[in-house]
Image (cartoon, rainbow, N blue to C red; front, side, top):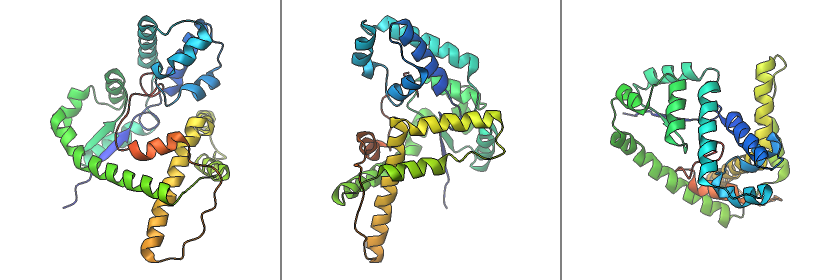
Length: 270
């Protein structure tokens, strides 16, 4: 008998806290003496922890990045999230429907700190991690064990794909990334003001260096899978012609996507 489980990502799927977090970070950096725009702040820090960029911050502000500054950042970020965070349209209904469909076999995966995870769960109708486990009849150990086998399979698959990418010298061109971004964000003619704002925000994210790295990673993984399938079928393989090496972020993602790294600046720590 096949057992189906659903794992939700947090930011961008259940909620969108990145603009709120970025707004707080941008404001505090400006207060500290770094005249950085919201757009530049998002492009600089998305996918990173604030502490990992300590040297950059200290150069631009002329001040050390202290524990006190970080504590104020967390406090202001948390307050902003509590006041203004809203679920993504349709997320609540989707979670409830899939909870019923899978008999409670759903989960929320995140590299975020505990406050953000519990807050995000509350936004989709689950009061806390304890409430989640009560609703699903699980303990923390049960939950971790339920993901162990799939995590091992994902890790093995990612390592194999990473080796294929290296051995076959697969690459991604700027044109391929641009085409994929355009395909992913097609604004409907009847989009209202709120929808237009969401599409515009998504375009900005995907066109940032971090967004392009994610898109590059998706494309190169697709190429690796297609290459394996072609070899298995005995197809004549076309020559590999591409221009841009996959970014360092994409290479790292290809070997680590099965597990969560340190919370990112806009996903959690920022």
